[in-house]
Length: 470
Ligand code: FES
Ligand SMILES: [Fe+2]
Image (cartoon, rainbow, N blue to C red; front, side):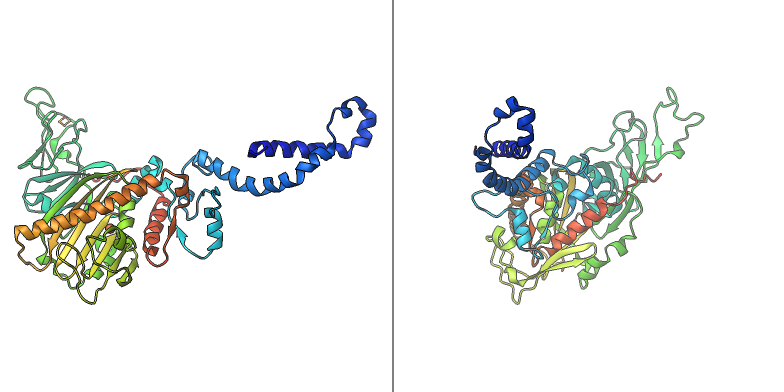
């Protein structure tokens, strides 16, 4: 009788028999034949006490968590924000004498905080919530202005799963439209290109100017006729998205309700004091393609300096003890102040600022004269895309060889990180990850601050759909 189920059945039976036996003197007289068939009480009692003790210890620790793991949910099957709270459902299986997470947590009460539960990274439902809240309410980074340098340049991008189109107008300004034709709602542009003076839909040749105004709807009203009563070309234009271009970086706010960008980004902007943005020059763009992870893991990885000494041992020379974390509203990250630059050729060993603007903008400043900006494009719960733009900040001239050296260095650094975040995503298949892991109070309080913003937004009301400006 070693297995848990047998012990449970036996203990239940024994309890019933003992109660039954209490009344035996009366029952023996009433049902003499039946009572003779019941085994003596002492046989059960011999097992009862030790089994009851085992039962009392094991059942609460094992049975309940298994139920949680099977359903993967609290409550009524709907993934709610409560699932994202620190210390959500947890595994408490004791194996090989190791301390369970529940035990560990109580042992270190007041110790490390927990991260977001696995659902926050893997659930399709939470991804949909993110699209309606985090990625709709905030200023989301979607592209580099230098990618559309000339009038007529157009670049299709996505934000919160929506197809958008960044366009450089004839006057040099940048506008962002929903990349959808007004006729039959086909996506208008499917790859970066110069569209000339008109954005022409390939399906029935409706054409829009660079400000989004509908200029042609050939034969829409019959051969050679476009307009008719109730349909006036001038009444129609591509739907615009609230846009802010900050230096080389294009942001959108889908619901149109976020604070003015300068206020929203003030904590980040204040940390870039002394930078002459007129001297910033893009010298390269790395396209890492799709990465099999959740976009938040990439953000968290950048925010914490804890992993640098281990993951980037061959590419960086930045001692952990010289780092500190930064938590200031929408700007979260870390920094390292080195007394002297210790980098060797092909590695990074300089004072740096690793700054993010919630939710997906990343800026790395490397003193004295380099800047890197990451474009992190969330695509789904387990898919994202990443680019890195390299900049000089002092107008210095770099040779092609030097630029290639920088490209190689950053390619390697990012690849080191990608392996980690893909494996972090895999790890979140396990019930162990329901707990959200443990966060260092010294190096990952910044990660927790990022996660607090995620929880805040997921708990907020969504408008149900993004605002579409006419
Ligand atoms: S769908 Fe664009 S012209 Fe018909
Ligand atoms: Fe890293």
